[in-house]
Length: 246
Image 1 (cartoon, rainbow, N blue to C red):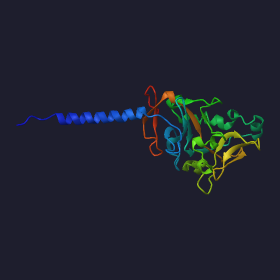
Image 2: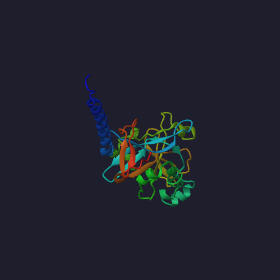
Image 3: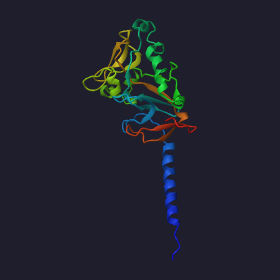
Image 4: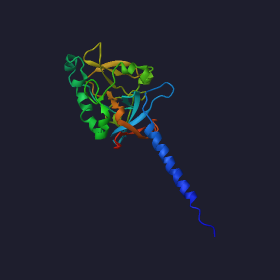
């Protein structure tokens, strides 16, 4: 009787381990990049928020607008909720539109920030206002390098939860969303998107205007754990010390 050949299962096991190692290495070696005309956006998951019609909490998907060796700028793929910028448009005007003094700024960096784990928050870097969650500026939404090549590219589309809970929605399916830039023509207003993705303004006290948050990440501290970076399969991130943030 011939001796049992153990080489085949051992080789198969080694092949499996090697394949696993290759996949792990490819994820670890991946880096974030910003928008390109040829490849479009990369996407990541960060935080959880109610998004379904029934209020089911799901991972927030973000598009990567910009990334270099130090910092990445992310924008929520969807308009997640509605919220006025400030309860008093006279006070807003008198502050010269200082976003860090507004009600919406306090919400983003207070209650909304709680949608992110401690490790996720550790990946975030403060912007010039000192907040970790912010909004894009008018100039950001005109920046072709971020993929905003025209009005249509600026359109924001809402979650079912946001519409169900009072977010305004146009007949084309999109919803308006705020920037953190004060209007130059009406100091009681802030710049926002309109139906076709064009930019206009509305009073900061308007309640049903949408919010599409933005966040800066510290690229030095993050590592890509899994995912292919597409909208359907966003990157999952970890801290460099390998503590999972999901």
